[in-house]
Image 1: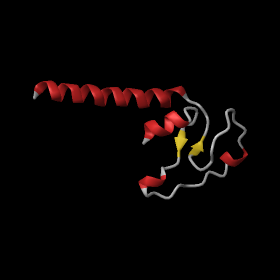
Image 2 (image 1 turned 90 degrees about the horizontal axis):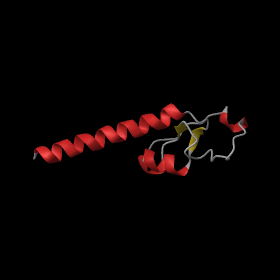
Image 3 (image 1 turned 180 degrees about the vertical axis):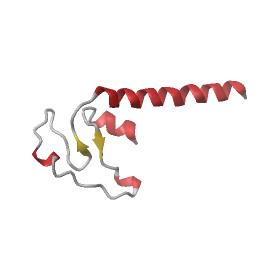
Length: 76
């Protein structure tokens, strides 16, 4: 789900839970007054300020998961 959210709006640093998660999305009153380019959708993005460390953390975790899966497949 996070990969889909990043693909849809890579400049956000916090997303609201997608509808299929069953979670109730919170409101961010501060974000309503933000002027960000490109504009973001308040229904899906909680906060839109780009921070490269958040994006790299996602890729680092995804890569570590993929490598671990490869190790387990090679051990079998």
